[in-house]
Amino acid sequence: MGRIKSALIKRTTEQLLVQSPETYTDKFEENKRVLTGAMPSKRIRNMVAGYITRIKKSQSKQFA
Image 1 (cartoon, rainbow, N blue to C red):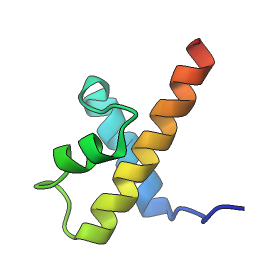
Image 2 (spheres, one colour):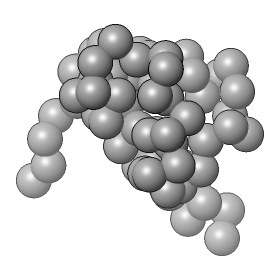
Image 3 (cartoon, rainbow, N blue to C red):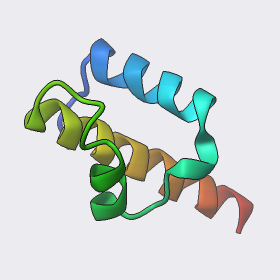
């Protein structure tokens, strides 16, 4: 079983993906680099980047 994401992480991720879905990929390191200036702390940035990566990977599996 995985860790449960907080509502803050989920809400922030959804807002970012609605604003600019083409900016993010299914690679964690690239998403982390894109979010570097936008997030208040390193921990939150990594959690959001990981959740974006997870969503993008599941979307690519649905369409494949």
